[in-house]
Length: 157
Image (cartoon, rainbow, N blue to C red; front, side):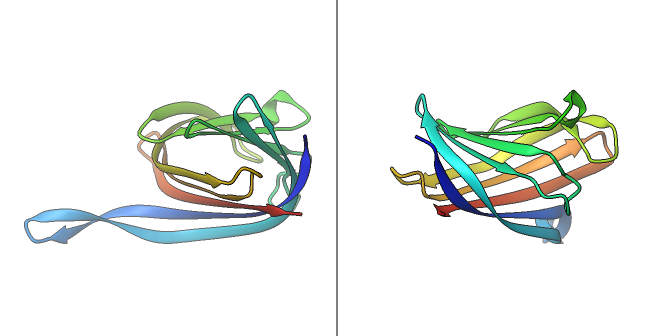
């Protein structure tokens, strides 16, 4: 049964740096950007998975793009799709696993990304309300590597 939900989605992006620590180095995260959106969506369950869908915003350059989240067995799949194949992207986040995915950046070409999930925690109750938290690293080539923390709060609409 589908139901309407209120979503609070916060995405924080960090750069990772190595800082001297005695005779070794420690990894430090430096916050670069945080985006938070409040939106309405739809949630339903099917085959022991929770699905959440919502429309992306035109302000983010994602007009006419729909996002589907699928949480199942400690795996989060984030799929974006729009009017054409060029608008589609599919990212699989699974704790301790590295996945390579094709990702479409608005106004640019598609790129292959390495996505390594450090932590994934889904805290949804029987009704499907609660939070999903994921900490993952995105890398392409030697030029770009960022750590991302995504927090999704699902509440009754």
